[in-house]
Length: 166
Length: 117
Image (cartoon, rainbow over all chains, first blue to last red; front, side):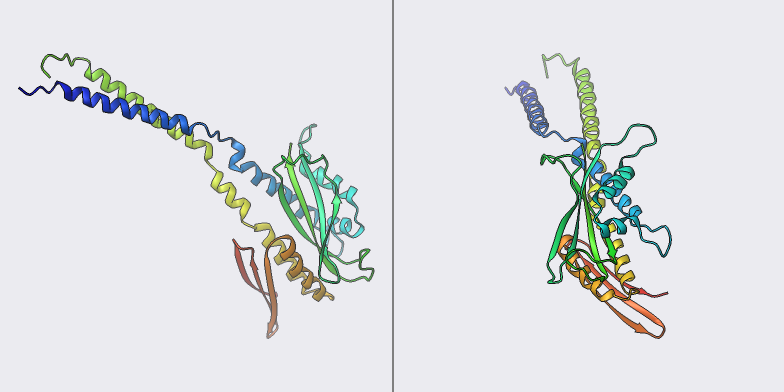
């Protein structure tokens, strides 16, 4: 006498096992929490903002005058840079300001072909190491000399800015 | 299935259907968090501004009286600070000047032959 009653129990057991395995899989997977910051969308926006600000600063008002960024690099005027850059990246339509922090340095080539980087503007807030800064840069053609090269010789320098939001 | 009362099987089956569809909806919702990540990463990685700027400064340097110094600086600085190999040269055909620009930062390569207006 063959009894088929056990088949139903077997199927039930298999189904229950599958459901338990699926739940365990979901629970194990759920331990990695994925925050919106991990998608780097805000980093992309910050990078575009920083680059646009630098391009704006490196645009001269007419064909013969210097751009503001050129004048800043030639005179090593970190305060003017900080003020102008801060206005561009942090101003909003209303009264309140955005909270983008930044630091800037400028690199140039010495006569012996080594690269020297100096701080143009110190960070607006001390770095703790936890910031996720993005890096933007802008080429500037400088027509005056600098302390290491007193002769008026055309040169190009690279202005680099690190931006982060806190 | 003699002896077993199977009246409730339809109810259980429908319960399974509903719970599985909820499960798949939850999966779809879960994936929506990562929307835009690939896009944002490729936008950040692509050196659009670097190429645009270096192209502008190279072209500008050829119209400067002291351009050779500037061009030497561009090569050294881009390698040191932007991790990119930049190479460029110029030649003339007739009344036009051509500048060949090569940019490579290991991920993105960009080549252009620019012709003077």
